Length: 116
Image (cartoon, rainbow, N blue to C red; front, side):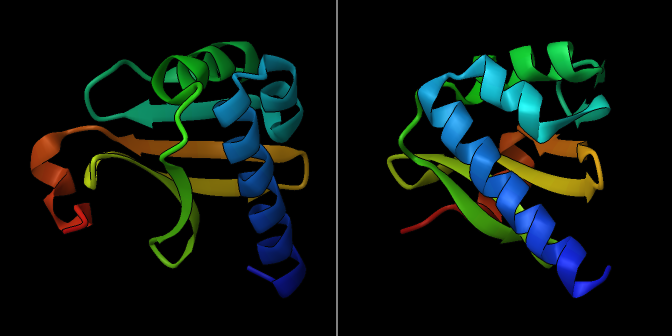
């Protein structure tokens, strides 16, 4: 991934986090590629900006503890409640917006993300 693509991903992740915190569906749509795919370990895969934006609002809307973190070496998201990770999201950007989201919700997989 080129430096400019990494910068774009960072910008898109910042937009995504801000939109989730505000519950701003229009801004979520603007950050997502039209054919975005979201894969969750405990929920069915969602495809398309409307479906993925709805999922993101459902999972992360109005959460102040949603932060930008390094996930698999790239900008991603982590949601914690009282220091315990409840979700981690790896993101892949494309020229047209965020193209893929891998959302981990399984408590067994999140143990290493807890803060003490």
